[in-house]
Length: 161
Image (cartoon, rainbow, N blue to C red; front, side, top):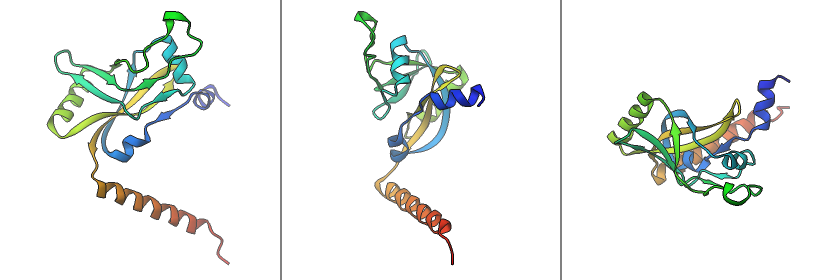
């Protein structure tokens, strides 16, 4: 096993399945995130909830921020070394990428949602997406098509006598 494959199997990938259910994802971007040491350790233990999170571009400074993501306090962090679980966290991206996200969010009825959190070469990365809200009938249609695909795969794997 090579080091690349070994790193991928050990590091967790935290998915936000609720975002894909509630939004049509129009565009995706991988960004870095500024964290404290105890937050990184909690992420390694998969103690993160992305479900309530959202991102916002601050128009004055053109900075990207993450709000509402709960990273559980690391139990072994002593005293003041811990962190606040739902504090705002700054995201790292190029200015042109931030400007592109700002234009897409301000033009349409869209929002920035965190899709996944994972490690790349020992650094925490966050995948964010430009999401447009789904209506109830869109969600039902997605569930029907997913069930139909599953049934087709099951039928294809059965033996024919």
